[in-house]
Image (cartoon, rainbow, N blue to C red; front, side, top):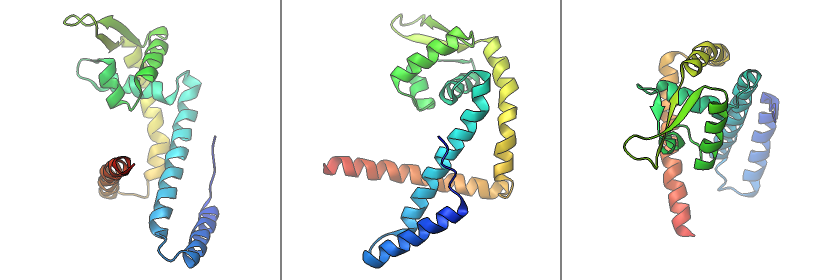
Length: 178
């Protein structure tokens, strides 16, 4: 579901936040606005990528798992590794694996060293699919970031990584306070 918040709507959000600050002077307006912008960007980018990938019969999470396997030197990983690398729950990895096996993009076999563990491996067909689709996804990404030179993109990425770490700390502190 696309929200399509325009710059005019964000000006209204800023105005509302300033009005709130008039009533609550300690309100961290800039922090709240940054949070709203990040959430909006995340949702809109997810919608954009989902819209691009959906015609090929995959969900974005499925494509993320497939590209994660593609990125591995031997094209293989255990489901538990994919949970971490592709930011998915074990239940989702199971569902995604089923879908990718059905499409013949991956195989699922028992681990040689531990029969209780499974190994997921990208197939030639899956590799070819990634090689064909991934460059098509670069077009809107490049268009979106064309006003940001590489050095600025790296700086933004570094700052966002810091935010991720700070969010982890804040979430941990909030959970321990409960």
